[in-house]
Structures are given as structure tokens and as C-alpha cells.
Amino acid sequence: MKSERANQTGATPRADDNASPLLGSHTPPSLSITPPPTVPVRLATPTAPVPRFVIIANPTAGIGAGKATRAKLIEAARLDLEKHGHAVEVLLESDPAKVSDLAEQAARSGETHIVAAGGDGTINAVANGLMRCATGNPATVKGVTLGILPLGTGNVFAFNLGIGKRPRDAIKVLRSGHVRVIDVGMARPLRESRAQSVNTNRPISQRYFLCMAGFGFDAKVIEETSLRLKFVLRDFAYVLKTLQNVVLHQGAQMTLKFPEGKVFADEAWLLMIGNAASYAWDIKVTGQARLDDGLVDVCLLPYENKLFSIQQAMMMLIGQHVERGTAHYWKVRSVRVESKPPVPIQLDGDEWGYTPVEISVLPGALHVMAPPEAP
Image (cartoon, rainbow, N blue to C red; front, side, top):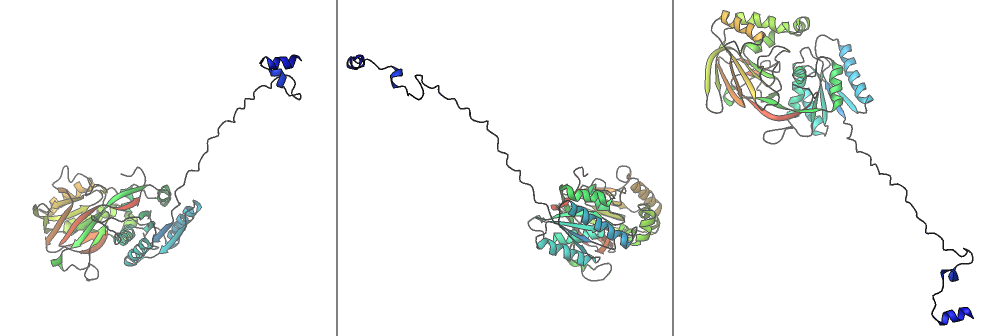
């Protein structure tokens, strides 16, 4: 009766009245659920693909190591690179023309890392093969990087890159993946020169160089400095041949024509055009040259008499021929060289042709594997 009256009078039922008999007479406390801590999702960092190397090796490079020793050095480089996950293909060739062809074929087939294993002549041949694939204006090689494994006697280009003399140091540079963009020099025979190769008397076409172009006296020194002499005397071989030839050399009438119309003419016993500073390790004829400044350096030593030339040569060998000597020095993008009589030309230490010729620079034309601290 009480409950009926309560309902009739509108009394609000108590919470107890609706309690579940299973839970008793008390309302269950609300549950507070703490979500588990959020664990950050770590996405895998994409790794760069491990490059494949094509090594174009000259098995006859240098004179200091026998054929078996050179083969061991090449094999050691292959094993070291493969140990670090690189696929490696080794191509052996000693003929410079065929070396250039192999480099061009590798680049056109999609290879991205091509290594020249040999001396400066082999490196020059590989670079020329790659430059055949250059496009654009100015021409540049795209998608291909040149590596250096110095196995020659001089290894001047490796020195200018800061790689050093030991093959194992060069292998570390290949693995490091550090790339430097450098300029490339170009020698173009002039149409009226009927240019011919020094050795074959065949017509020649334009050719590229990485270190230097030497004229007359310098080409003579290169020609007469044999591999055997370079092995026995190292850098002093060039010193000896320089002093021997400067006594005999008479010089030639040289004319330099620059793009802005300036003309310089004088009798000279040495003309060097450098893309790099060092001519033979510590001998720096074009000491202000840089591989990536977009210029070539021109150094001319005038001829007066043999005694004066000997004094100039001594100043050059100690690096004082510009600051304290009588050398003429320019930094240019191109220069036309004429002479009477025509004189021979060497490019990166190999005989090439005769004057007249136009020398120019292709800025940033080539990507090269080099140490981070490269000069």
C-alpha cells in the first residue's frame, strides 16, 4: 500500500528500487580505462642502392710493378668492392683507342660508375670515351661518375685530386661515394693546320685532357722521359730531362690569341696550359690552376738565350717562375695557339698533334670520385 501511495503522489523512486538483485543495492563505480602508451612507428630509412663498378684496367700500366703484381692490385680492388656489396666487372685493355671505346660503350649501356685503373694515359683514354657521351652546352657527362685506381708511374691526375699513391687509399675513395665536379680541357686542331698525329701521321680530331697541354719543349721532355727513367728517378726524371733539353732547345715564335681580341706574341721555349696545378707531382708549372674554376691557366716562358732559359727552368722547378721570374701567366676560358715552326703538343703526358690549335675549357663537364678534402 505504501508503494502504491507513493506512486500515486508522484514520489520519485529511489535508486535502490531499481537495483539489480545480482549487483546488490549499490550502483557499480564507473570504470576508467587508460589506453596503452602510443609507440611511435619507425619507418625504415631508404638506403641508396649500392652502385655497380665497371673497372677498365690497363694491365701494362707503369714500370715499377710486374704484370703479376698489377693483376693482384686489380683483383684486390675487385674483392674489396665486392666485400662491401658492390657488383664489379673488370675489363682489361692496354690500347688507348680501345680503352676509350670500352668507356663509351659502358656509359651508353647505362653503367653509372666507371673506374680507370692505370696511369694518366689510361685515365685520359677513359675520360675521352666518357666525353663522347657529353650533351648540352657547355657539354657535360650526365649520369656517369669516373673513378680512379692509380697504377701508373706518375699518377699526376690522382695527385691533383688528393687521392694519393697507394691503391688501397683509392679503393676507399671509390667506396666513400664522395663525388667532385671538375672541368675538362679540350684541344681542337684548327682547320688550316692539317693536324696530324705525332706518331702515326694520321689526321687527328679534337681530344680532351684533365691535367695539361704542353707545347714544344714540354712535349719533347715527355717524349724523352722513358718509363724506365721515371721508375728509377721518379719526379727527378723530369728534372733531369728538363735541364738536358733546355740547353739544346732554341724556342719557337709563339702567338696566343684570346677571345676578347688580345694577341700576345713572343719567342718562347716553354708553353703550358693547365687545367690542374701539378705537372709532375710537386712540379707546378701552372700552380694557380684549379680543377673546378671554369678556367685554364696559360704559362709562357720567353726565350732570350740558353743561360737565361736554364735560370728560368731552375725557378720553375722550385715554383718561383711566376712570382720571381719572367713567366707570362693568364687565366682564360680559351686561347688559340699558333707557332713558327709548328711544334708538337702533349695532352696529359701523351703526344697528340701539332700547332695551330685552340684550347678551351668545359666547366663542370665530369663527375669524379674524390676524397672530401680534395684540393
